[in-house]
Amino acid sequence: MAGFLDRAKEQAQSALQQGKQKVDDVQQQKAGGDLLKKLGAAYYAERRGSGSPQATQDALTALDAYVNTHGDAFLRH
Image (cartoon, rainbow, N blue to C red; front, side):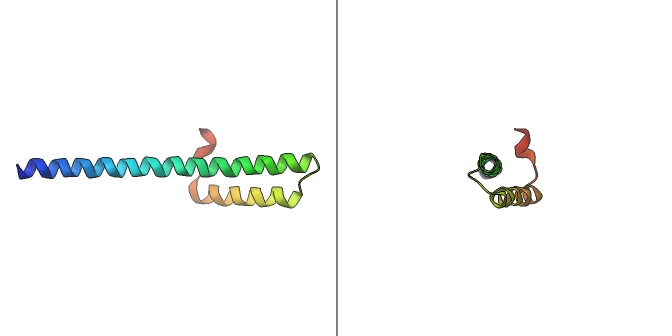
């Protein structure tokens, strides 16, 4: 009986870890998408005369920093 409980506990812990990883992946996808959206909005505003080149550059810098840290996988989804 103890062996069965140990295996069940291992499986539950593994499932929990996989669930946490999936949540982390989804959160990273969302964060990358949000930064990309901010860059697009800053560029659009700049082109329409209500934004500034600095706001566009700041958004690009933030996106570059994110890509350098987390990769660019969010761009392919």
